[in-house]
Image (tube, rainbow, N blue to C red; front, side, top):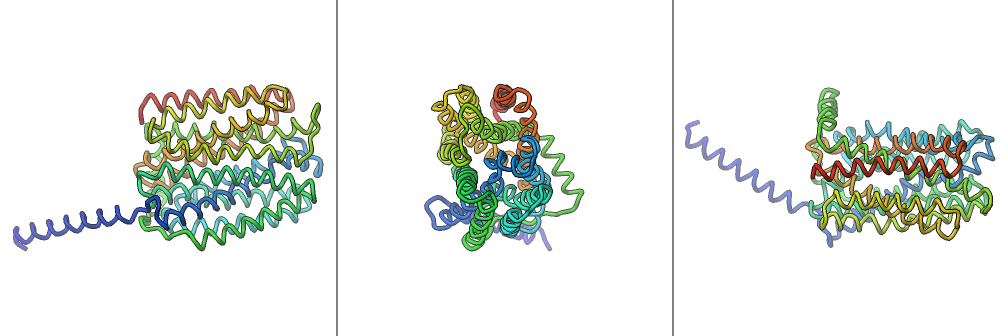
Length: 418
């Protein structure tokens, strides 16, 4: 082939690449289209089901303590084992989705988690409960890691922060629904009926998710070879900003779960002695998260990620200090402020991962959520020690320490202007 024909070939290939690039831009899902509505509804329902399944036992911890004769710290293991196995599974489901696709992993994960939850309502031993909770958490890792990656690949770049906020608002409503429904149904019937109902509800959500979520258009299979995974793993940890975001997820989630794990013990003891249903009703504070997470996405576009992350974390700290008062009419507003700050901060931090990761975005999201749920497991269980020894004052001091560290990490992220 002579030089002129080579030049023509190269020129034609450049044109083809340019046309493919332009076509890819047109394939992004934009706000206001039917596809955007389908993605929003599908991932909203997936987030709702995920958090309902994961946290439905949280308001039941005092009931489980009494039913099975275990301490508060031991009872909290029913939540910690789910979040811990979820964190472990994230190390595998993210890379797995990089290889075989986003939608198949998410659909399978939701179906398995719902089935395991229904089975957990039939267990007669404490160890049986823990086994089913562990399998539920392991299954849900396939949704948590992949949902964020799907959005970062399929949604138009200008709309990613907003879409991530809507997705996380589904998480907040799911967390509220799981706690509220399980608390009320336990008072009316039993904790077994409550958990079985949430499992069946999540099974229906999984089937709807399977039906309406559009197939991936920008997914490109990646290798599952151990060497490639290790290279990408080292690349993520050597990045200037990603390890800080991983640490932020650990601290934020650790603080959040600790508060909701032990607020029930506080209110079901003296001087209030409230019922399980009333404690479950405190989950309405999650509604503030469904508002604050998309709001944080909009604020990020205007003010930048760093300032919004700092402000949101500070809101959590202010809410915690309000909750410390023994006046009941201050506790709910304090929880609402704390929850709004958490979901806003999580929305910013998780939405930062996709743009920051240079490659293997599924693995990067998995590492963030691995840290996030390890924070839930470690801090959620460790908080039981502080509650047992020092009461609510110990919980307040412990969560304050986590949030101060989170503010320091957010300050460094903002200072680096990543």
